Image (cartoon, rainbow, N blue to C red; front, top):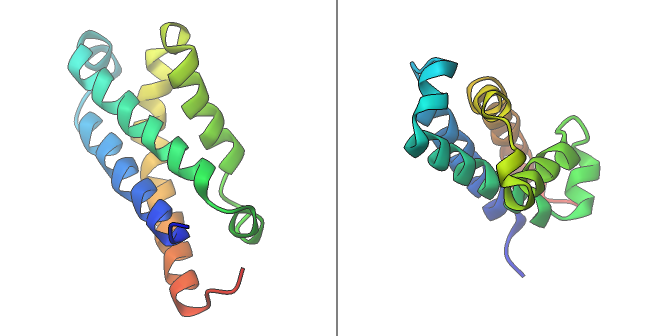
Length: 117
């Protein structure tokens, strides 16, 4: 079994990447840039996939993280990719990803200090 902190680290890494891919970019520029859209969608997909692997005990211990919504975003990106709106993907990368990084860093620090489930 993989250490849950590694899944949290994956989430941090890819949330940072998603945010970096849209840094300084407007929604219109993002909507016109297929490469950036692919990059952000992939990064958010990985965030959601890793979130789905975080054990329930950790998710319950840290309920302020919207685990279900993160996994749902991944499912939407994976299974309804043609119906995924660019503005939602963009806003998620621009606004939510940096907040998630802060939350997850605090969780990792807590788990490293006190790894109880």
